Picture 1: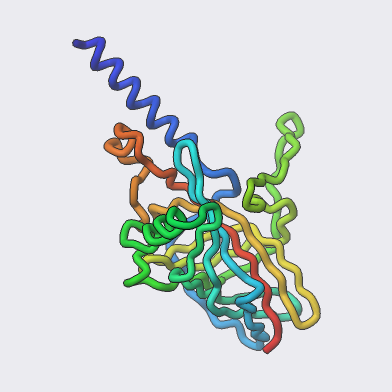
Picture 2 (picture 1 turned 180 degrees about the vertical axis):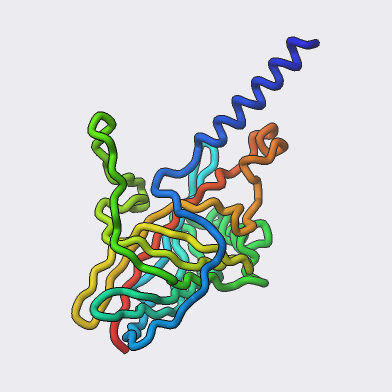
Amino acid sequence: MKMIKQSALFLSFAMALAACNGGSEGTEAEVGEANEVVEIEEAASLSIEPAQSEVIWRGRKPGGEHYGTIAIEEGTIQLKDDEVVGGTIVMDLTRLEVKDLEGEYKQKLTGHLASPDFFDVENFPKAKFVITAVEPYVAEEVPAEEEVVEEEVTSNFGSYELANPTHTITGNLTMRDTTLSITIPAEIEVEENAVKAKSRFVIDRTDWNLNYQDETDPVNIAKDKFIYNDVNVGFEVVATEE
């Protein structure tokens, strides 16, 4: 009996370890309490072009993944002295789209993501990201004996890691009535009368109360029915003068 109990404990530990090691590739966002949003004086406001902007996402489970987009409804990017200093992105979760499925399966997953198991769009139809700080990107120094050649992580739905970030953006991300600060890498290009920006990062969905089939729940692990908590997220934004 003791041997059976030990084997069961070992199996549970092994499955938990497998769950923890199955997260998404990419740069993990630094997550903390929401920051105060300070208005920037004398900053020019550029309007985000919804038709040229979107959010991409990817979620994974053992043996598979799903990916898609979320429409950006509106937003602004603030410029001062040709530098991005603030901004707001409003996302329409009612226009979340699954890109890897078709027909009945696509409709079924889209409906499930809109349900209270995930985004609960009936009660929380919008998500918002408000920039609170922008700094030049500083790469972490790696000791010479530990240097490795980093390759851009890609899949069948684009890249999940920036090859050449130029800035670090901190902002308040609100989903399901929960607001937390995230710090993420970004590639920002300021052109005449326009700004192009993109970011790639990883967040833990349960920080925003998206807890369905949480990978850390022992019951989900025992049933081998869990979804990895790490989710890949990306912004593609184009903003122009009004």
